[in-house]
Length: 200
Image (cartoon, rainbow, N blue to C red; front, side, top):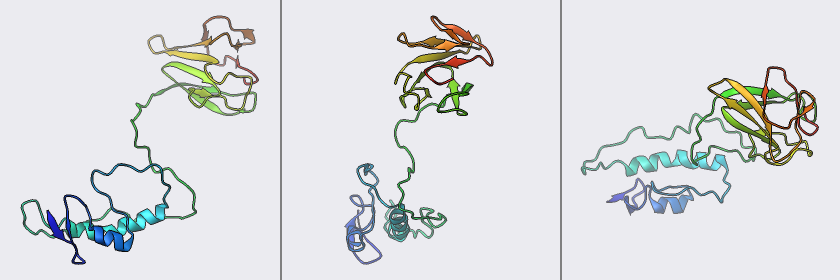
């Protein structure tokens, strides 16, 4: 449907959500409803916020003609950007992740590092198998201990039916449970000591 913007420009609202002439003249940000996310560019949050505020009136003007052809004025159309206090320190910040949402896994227990480079840090355990290693893909990440395998040095399994924790070495890696070399799956009890590499 061809409509006229507040500045007197004519454009097709089925193709552009806001007036492309005003967009080009003002250098403003405009998005079509079916636009895809651009992840190759870093943009200032300040610029986006200012652009979104400027688009309020343009979009309100473009929405003033309803689907039935009647002219219904849109009085209050905004993006809610006025209430945002913006500190432009030129730091890149993540505003959200638009990928597949992951199911939140409830915490079933914790490990606490008592010796090593990460002393004092705690690690959350979830139901099922928790892999231990240096890689960010692991459930328990011991990044600073180079004696630990990058992936799957050991695993701790939480059994939801029996309400128990079990530790197991993976791929013939050395794991100590209460100062004894772990050769097979062993049940963990409260205050048990696990040593992997230089981390305890």
